Length: 389
Image (tube, rainbow, N blue to C red):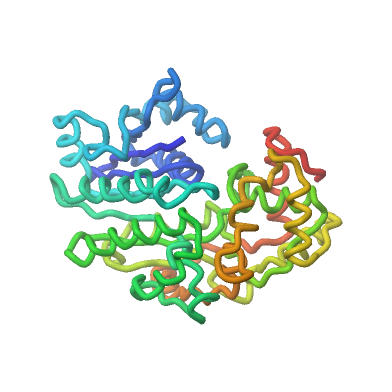
C-alpha cells in the first residue's frame, strides 16, 4: 500500500514517505521525544479505513509502536498523493501547506511488470503534487528520495564509468528505453524535482541502492528485488553469471544518513548518494553468491541463459516470477533488460562524505553472512518464505 506521512516537530516540520523505508522513517519519528505529532496521509481500500491500513502496514514489519505515548502522536489523514490537493478538502490542504516547514518524500511505486504509464500517477504525478505542496503556503524545503535507477543502464549503453552526485540526468536518457517502467518514472520524477530546485525551491535529493532490510532486527520487504532474487536463487540452487554491482544498503544506514544531512540547511540544494562509500566493499552478483556459499547454502553460478531457462520451468507463482520481464525480455540485440544494466558505473560519494564527516557514528554495514542471516530469520519468523537458517 501507499502511505504518505507528515510530521510536525517544533518549527512545523513535515515528512512524506511510503512503503518499507517510509515505515521505518515513521517509526524513527515516533520514537523521538521532540516529535509531538505525525500526520499520515493514506487511502482507504476495499472497505478498510486509512488508519487501519497504516497500522497493518507497520505491523507487517514489526514497526507498530508499543507505547500509547508514541501511538497518540499519529494522526491519519484520508487522502491520496495522486490527487492535485492530496485528496484533501481545499481548506485542509491550505492548513497543511501552512503547517509544515520541511517535507520528506521518501517513496515511489515499484513494479517489475508494469510500464512507465502505469507508474506515472503514483511516482511522477505524486511527486509533482508533493512539489506543489512544498511551494504553497509557508516557505519550506523538501527532501526527496530518488534511486540510482534514475540513471538507467548508462554503464552498459553509454559506457559511463562514474557518476557525480549532481551531474545532469539528461544525457543518460538514451539508455532508459532499455530499462523498466519503474526506472523511467524515477528519471522523470527526479527531473521534475531538479527543475523546481533550479527555480529556487530549497531541495535535497538522495539516491539509495538496494535496501536489504534492518541490520539489527532483520525486518525486510518480502516483495522487493533483493528478497525475491536471493530467496529464489537459494530455492533454485543456482545463480546467474552477470557483471553487475548490486549496491546493497541497510535501511538504518540510509535513514541515519538522511536525517543527519537534513538536519542542517547548509546541505540543501545538493544531491547525495546513500550507497557503499567504498566501491571495493560493494558486492556484485557473483560476490552475492559467494556470501550465500559462506553462509552454508549450496548455490552454484551458471550461465545467464541456463539460469533463465531454469526459471521458465518454475511455477507461475514462483518467487522470481514477478521479475521475469526484466530477466528474459530482450531489448537490445541479445541483451535482456537486466543484462543491459551490466557494468555499473562508480557512483561518486563526495557530497555524502563531506556531509557525514562530522558524524562518524553513521557507518555502512557491508553485505556479509552476518547481515544475510538477518532477513532470512525475519522471513521465517513472519512466514513470508521458509528458508533453512
